[in-house]
Length: 174
Image 1 (cartoon, rainbow, N blue to C red):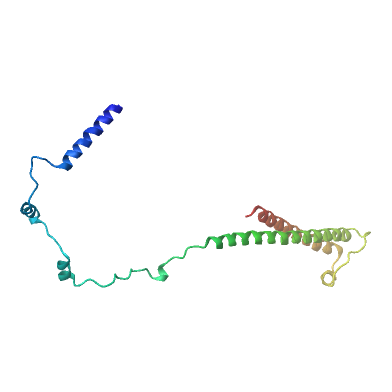
Image 2: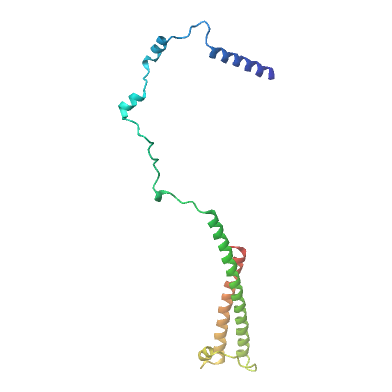
């Protein structure tokens, strides 16, 4: 196989050398013969171009650029990194605030459950109320006060569940 490739390479090289050298038996064409061959072709010179299109400008024409409004600005990769860092920072801040809120809600839930026990059991000490809560409880019996306390406990538990879900989402990075 290698011999075949070498032989083919030699044959093609010799054929190319013979074609480029021309046929030694045929004489080189004279200027008249070349002129007869070129008789059917059109030759365009600088003078012909000046007659057809006028003189050439002294300097090349300005390149046509698209309008500035048509250009689309590329996003800055550093800005994207800053945005990502800001998102992580905001997520971390949100997680800290959510933890504080969860702690406050758990304390409030514990207070309300203690109050519920005090309202349900007449032998325990009466709960300490703020002025706002005392105004709301005025004129209510213990059963109605117990229902209001249970409603408040239910609301706090819902808020606590929502806050814990938000904290989990922030910690996962979602």
